[in-house]
Length: 64
Image: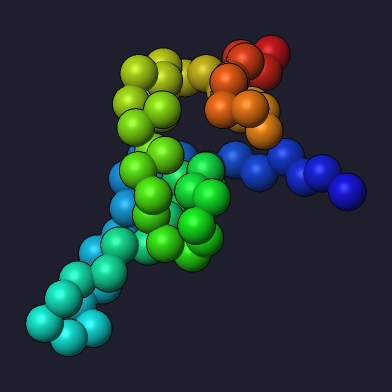
């Protein structure tokens, strides 16, 4: 079952659990959930007033 989820965050959240930081995904695109894998870079050129759907192959399309 697929779900459409609206996510507004474009970057990861830093968690300092010890000496080393851990980055948690907030964009929803990471293939290494719950950790960031850099997939948020795909969202950097999104228009703030538009909605997008990301496909399994990494492509995106605007949702109207």
